[in-house]
Length: 260
Image (cartoon, rainbow, N blue to C red; front, side, top):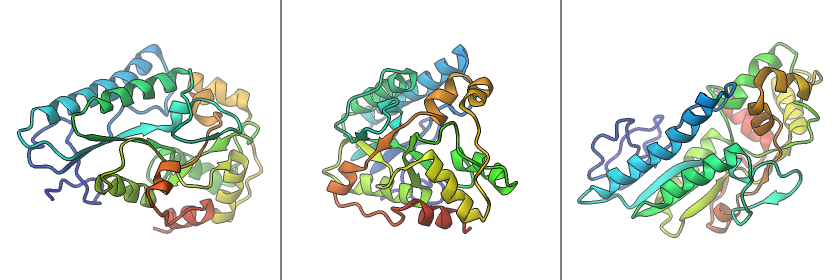
């Protein structure tokens, strides 16, 4: 297999400029404008267009190849489901109706247009101390001021970075896998449980909540659709395909990701 490096893990990726992908066996497309910022009309347009137009360019580049790759693995997100309370969600569940759900629907439609096997990995919260939600939480917890967000009753569906890389590789190698696939660990937790577990791992209390009204004041619409949204998502298709998580429970995943 011809390999371009992706975060040092040796899976196929396409550079930002969609340079030569000829001879690649697989393409992994993860690009998209950040969402963890206060949303403006311009930012929301960038979030949508970077995902949809970027994916369309990837699909067009694949179509131009004399020897096409076997598979396109495209990032997606559990934002597809919207805010669903305590409902258990699988790939068979319908979409939400908010802005992020709209973005994901159009993103996945663009990926499905590929004339090769296409897998849309619906990422949950990816646990890494180097970026994403966990990296933003760590400073407060390490300063002894961490705690739940809002009521803490909202469900968080997460996956350790180590397992996510394994999921990407599994999607490349599993010829029977196609369409949307929930890239989340099998044991989602409430935000209150997440805060308590992170506090235990860091040996810090998790007793200072951040009120929902403060989050809305600081982050606007983004807070309601990312920090306070409840999504209890299960990796049904991965488990049926035989994937085994190395860190299925939150505490073990946090200890693994924070041990480096």
